[in-house]
Length: 163
Image (cartoon, rainbow, N blue to C red; front, side, top):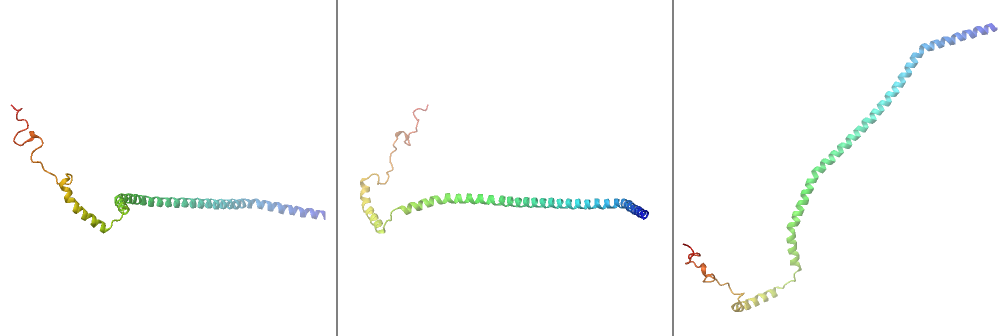
């Protein structure tokens, strides 16, 4: 029986060694499968990174497009605002004298119509009498003779000094 056990052990060793040798034949395919799995995993990682980078680039492009649109609208708006400010300044300058006159007229004391009539009647009664004696109120007098005698029309200015 010991021999039988030895023979069985030998057969088992041969089977195990044979299976090991058959595994060594399958080993290149197993390593190929392992390499393929690693490559697929790396490819998936690279695709994920590539998609992340594309998303980042698209986000940056969108941000640049928004900035460009904001600057374009600002460039269109600024001249309009500047023209509006200039027109409002011109309007304020034109209205300033009118507003000043209005304020001055509003601040003067109110005058009754009866006071105006009384003042007009008094001036019409007083003025003709005071014109007679007051030289400031009399009409201007035109001189009949020139004030400077050498500018008379019949004598030339330098008649004596000519040869």
